Length: 258
Image 1: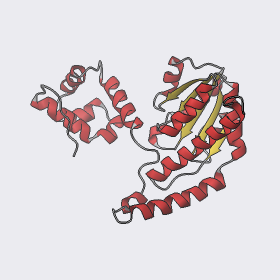
Image 2: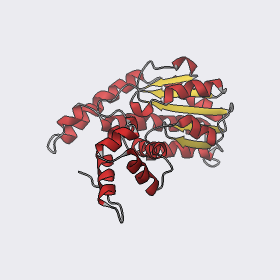
Image 3: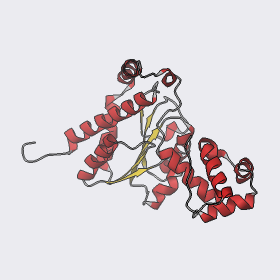
Image 4: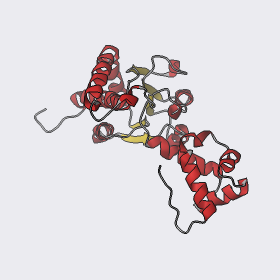
């Protein structure tokens, strides 16, 4: 079990921190009364704890925790197949799952839609990519866009509209949402309609064929729901890499020989 260390902590503060950590996966849905009860302290004691570690309110503390947990959890969890991994079968099981999901991706992926998304990126100077997961491939796509003078923002789905507005979201922006249907991307669907009402160009990379406010999207790229955490990462990175290739071939010139 993970343990929380708080410098110069009291016994009560240590218990609050430890029990909060143990309930971190459900923390976003808890009221201060609920978590205080689990910690066996009063609401005022829990609020003093929040204040002592640097937060003005329980809400601010909860938002920060939910945002942090969301950034470091993978897409599409949990997976039942992952429970069957052992040291002996890990690579064989992973290969079979990835192979099966790759076949699904190739059947679903609309390469013309990929090109349409790339072309939309080329037409907009300010681009927002709303995604749970950060990887080298995502940053490579970010770099490809930046090389051609785009102002690119990587935004976490939680509270994404407020975050984008803070960065200058307007009717000239291109917004690319990644939606997996989990609770960690529940802010995406409402944000789609908000962005469309602002006049933004909206595209979505989705694990699901249908989702709320899909009619507000200019492009929808369906990739299917992966069968494991590892496979999910692979599929998403493959699609982002393909978008990079499409963008480079049409919009980036390296030297005089191209």
